[in-house]
Each structure stands twice: as C-alpha cells, then as structure tokens.
Length: 162
Image (tube, rainbow, N blue to C red; front, top):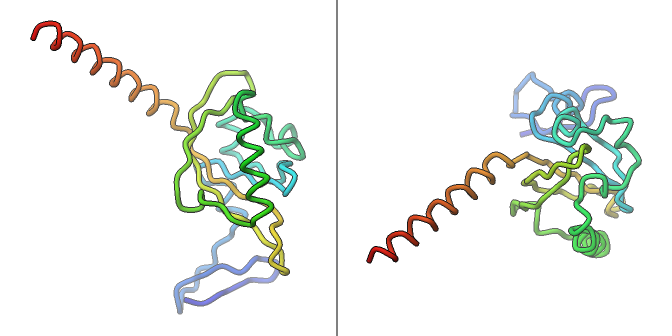
C-alpha cells in the first residue's frame, strides 16, 4: 500500500498500483452513517448529510454548537466527564469498542445510536478533535425491547403453569 495525494487532496492509503484516489470529502458527504467532528471544547466542526437526516439539524444549525444539541440532558455530565478525560489523556477505548447510547433529535424524540470515535491529531501529536461515525439503531433497539418483554411474558406464563 502507498500513500497518494492529488493536489489539494489529503493523502489516502491506496493499494499499490491502484489508479483510484479516494475523495475523502465526497466519502464523508455520501456515506450513510453520520460523521461528526468536534473540537477539543466539544464544538461541532463537521456535520455531514447523514447527521442532518439522523438528528434533524442542518449543518448551519449544528456547526459551532456544542454536542449538547444531540445529548439527552440526563447523559450530559457523564458524556462531558468522558470527553474531558479523553482530551486530557489523548486516549479513548471507543475507537474499537462500539458505544451504544441514547441521543435526542432536534424535534425532541429519543434515538438509540451506536458509534465509534477516533482522535484527530495535529502535526505535533496534540489532539485537535474527535470524529464519531454514528448509526441510528432506534428500530433495532425497539424491536429487541419488544422481544425481551415478550420473552418475559412467556416465561411468567410458563412459571405459573409449571
């Protein structure tokens, strides 16, 4: 594999001999998962089309705002404690482990999301931001909850009959 870069395009890893160069801006704009980047203070600096579809905020509404716009009030302290620790240590366990948490849509309805994060670093190695790749799992979570309730009902019936 080799690093390639067209003029004005960030370097990407491509297969040796491959003529294709990945346009990273296009990739982020067309991917089905939300891609959100925030700076060390937690202000949103990138918000793709999938983030708009998922959370309801346009890029103009989201850019520069705190991540609090999508974090339920009851989760904010825990979120910011972890965010601060990540900024201070430059480490996160969620680059490989999927994190599943509640979120909130612009209109106030609850979402269940799953995401991974990666730390973005400057040339000096200092953390300059965090990128999250987010998927809406609300339908899956709702279906699992229904199945768990149904299983509990059937177990209660079986126990009562037994």
